[in-house]
Length: 230
Image 1 (cartoon, rainbow, N blue to C red):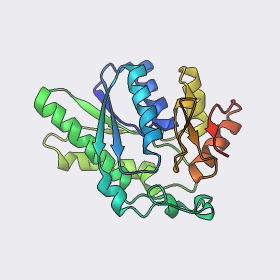
Image 2 (image 1 turned 90 degrees about the horizontal axis):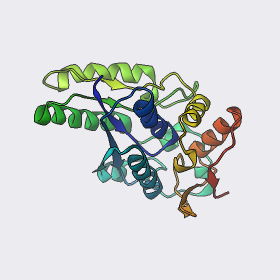
Image 3 (image 1 turned 180 degrees about the vertical axis):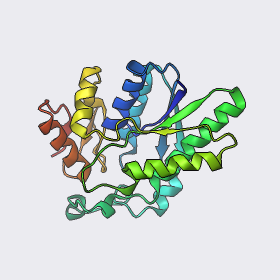
């Protein structure tokens, strides 16, 4: 099995994914990639990714793509009032072409590792089933089309984009995380960013991502260890 480059946001899905690849798939060489696109929750996300890297003894690369935040139309990057934050409209939270760009950055790193060190990496991401309403770039169709790109955008084409949780819902990811001993309070889902309380990242509790997180803990019948600001 190839080594793993994991696109990691510090969120529940990507953190559990990293533990899964290390502990279940037994992938020894893992590189975490965190993208700084000037998101409002940057510090909270980075905190969780840095803790993950320490827990798994994994290499972490932080990449500056702040220009994406500058052109973004998403509330993830812009100040918003309470009514906007409470919005569940997908377009309010959509960052233009984010997942496509992030995958290609991961692919570039993978090809660089092969050319410079003759080490083979595949690129992993934590997208999963979101129900009928979900971003187009979190679907099986998206992943299938992106995998076709690897054949024409690299010299060998021998790379894969892999999303092991693609057909899992968030409840199942929570259950898996607990089985693997993941401290889920050190994962961050919030789009807004609310700082820290006793060295634990605080969720706003009202944005779309927080609502999804709360609902998943409820339906998984597990205690929600997250800290919420409201």
